[in-house]
Image 1 (cartoon, rainbow, N blue to C red):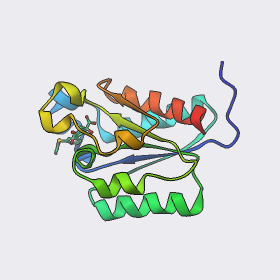
Image 2: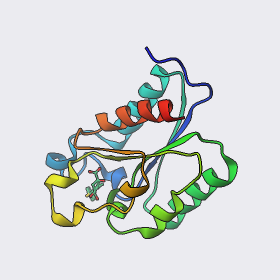
Image 3: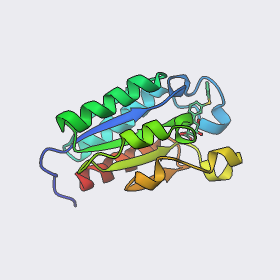
Image 4: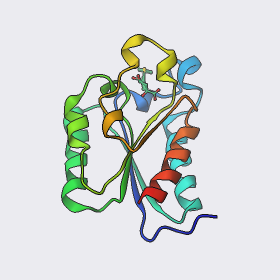
Length: 151
Ligand SMILES: O=C(O)[C@]1(O)C=C(c2cccc(Sc3ccccc3)c2)[C@@H](O)[C@H](O)C1
């Protein structure tokens, strides 16, 4: 098995409307709630003896502020992000995510490539180490696990 990566601290960031997970469009995003997302992330971190912090915001400025803090403080060794709608709209979020020595892993609950055309482009993917999409909230667990390896 993988050794514990010394001091892996993963920040998981979630964009707009993800707090509403499970409440609407369960056919697309599944029945899981946002608290289930937190649970998946925590379990994955425990399995790798890593630390994880999970946040969600509907305010783009707040998200960018959190990302700046990572760049400034180097408190986290990797970022897992589900930018939700900002995936497809925000150059600002993608620009902020370019942080030396902090790998970015992009996660989508749904398979964005099997959905509306506007969801097929991501501003984040070009600056991400990798992208996980279409595996429901399990994708967060895969992402946290890989984030530890990249830490
Ligand atoms: O599949 C995803 O995880 C995704 O990142 C997530 C999204 C997402 C996230 C949360 C909610 C919604 S739609 C919605 C809005 C309000 C209430 C319930 C669902 C879409 C989409 O904007 C993205 O295109 C795809």
